[in-house]
Image (cartoon, rainbow, N blue to C red):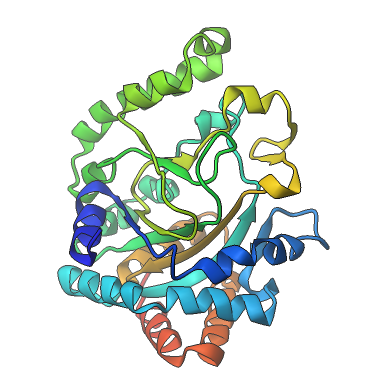
Length: 309
């Protein structure tokens, strides 16, 4: 997909795929090294400051790729706002959806908490609002999961401030969540393909190492494990399942956004009794960017310093 089509797809569909799998072969070959980073913790989430120096550089090099910089520059021009790679960068190991027990069948919007506040809603519909993630998945999206599912265009009703249409278009998902929670035996009568079609959802089948961009307003989830696989594996908690090492799922994420996106994000956090510690953590993280890619640090710093509450 060309860069122009990547951008258009992101704007109109709420997600897009940029195939840089050939460029990122070095990272894919280091998957076992990444898995080993988790050996001293029971946590399945690894923050950027805990990456080895080698891994920090390798991942920042990908997010500093000229294709991403061009994508962000064009998005900046289109929205008339500075858009940059921003914290947090993190790795998730074996984050899996078990469609039979995971709450809401895993479907969510990253901005969902922000929808409770007028301040955030005014920003979420602002043309200058940008907040999204770039996911890198180091495996194919097959029976063990591996990447994400999305509901295309599910961001548009927030973006265009169409509250009534949002409720109508969200009815199918609310119905599935209701059946899943209160009528689980009935829910199990239908396979996952039926529910995906009912939601007009799609499974992202990107090559390992490709970049998947998605808007914080887009409804998405981790692709569930197939039904026959779930029965063979140990469930650790609602979102984590133990798999053989060779089938470990690794997902690497970074955020990108504008000052308006950061403002909405932090307003929501502060209403939930968050402290300034997260902002301090962001500043510490971008100082690591500075060590390797000063330009990435400068643009992130500019966006963060311009956020307003």
